[in-house]
Image 1 (spheres, rainbow, N blue to C red):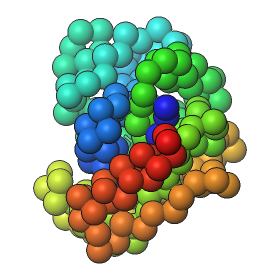
Image 2 (cartoon, rainbow, N blue to C red; image 1 turned 120 degrees about the vertical axis):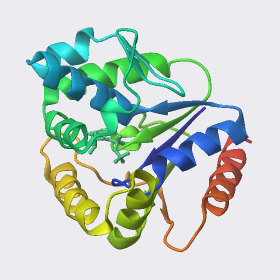
Image 3 (cartoon, rainbow, N blue to C red; image 1 turned 30 degrees about the vertical axis):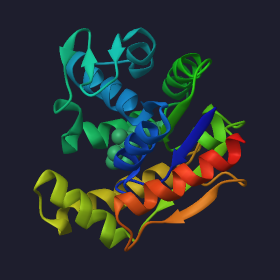
Image 4 (cartoon, rainbow, N blue to C red; image 1 turned 180 degrees about the horizontal axis):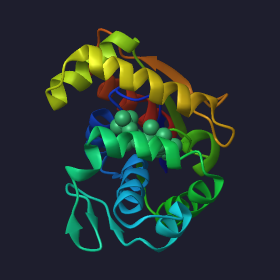
Amino acid sequence: MVVAIDGPAGAGKSTVARASAEALGFTYLDSGAMYRATALAFLERGGPAADRARELDIELGRRVRVEGRDVTEAIRTPEASETASRIATDPEVRHALVDRQRELMSSGDWVAEGRDIGTVVAPDAALKVFLTASPEERARRRAAEIGVDPETVLMDQTLRDEQDRSREHSPLRAADDAVDLDTTGLDVDQVVERIVALARDRSE
Ligand code: CDP
């Protein structure tokens, strides 16, 4: 079974998806890490980004490795984030990474997180959740996590949201059959409980 969790930057997808996967005994897929790893390789080695997306040896898990090198921190810098969002507008990059995500999820139980899991990667997912929170709350959470001031985070986040929502290919949007979950004012445990309950309900 696949649980798809999509939503804008800083809605808490990673924390919530990881914890939900653990609670359900499913494997966690961080699709954004694949866009980020591709972006880092593109920055370091040059383009075309689609070639990087096709050929790169990406290992996902607690630590993210590219060609064996630990890039867990390197893919989270503001430059890598901005570049990830930019190369994610390229249909060839998306095609290559979506193929790899579908291949991974072709067997087993998954909680997959991203922007287009419910709409493109796994349109048949048993449960789709669209996770949101107010822009200020999202910026505050991200700022606390990376130790930058919330105003700067809010500016970068607004730009990236706009880029993700307005791109021509697979723009960020909720699938028609997604459950909207606004996490403003909720803590991680409350959100995870809700998702786990919904997933158990759908698997019966
Ligand atoms: O953690 P955060 O939500 O800030 O970002 P992420 O999930 O790591 O994704 C980084 C960037 O990759 C996003 O801004 C999107 O542009 C892109 N992305 C995408 O287009 N499709 C996905 N399924 C996942 C990420």
